[in-house]
Length: 111
Image (spheres, rainbow, N blue to C red):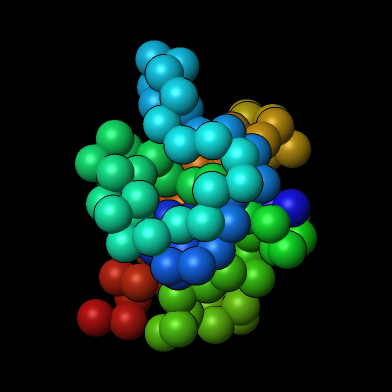
């Protein structure tokens, strides 16, 4: 099982674990095969990612938007390095923040 971003989820995928909203209320249980209605519910409640059966928890950089290459993302991360020099980028939250900032920078450089 692996975390999959909501934009990469498709109808027919199966949840590997329960999905809760921000307050801890159960939205969908493990084992549910997702329908279009389920996807609407997840987006409505602000769920950003869920555990999907059959996916691996791999490097988040392997799930890039089609218009951004790994090289562009690496360059954006390197240019943002000085802004994160006093942060522990090995911490999951900081690592994700750096990744999101690099994605945004790489996307804006395309324009």
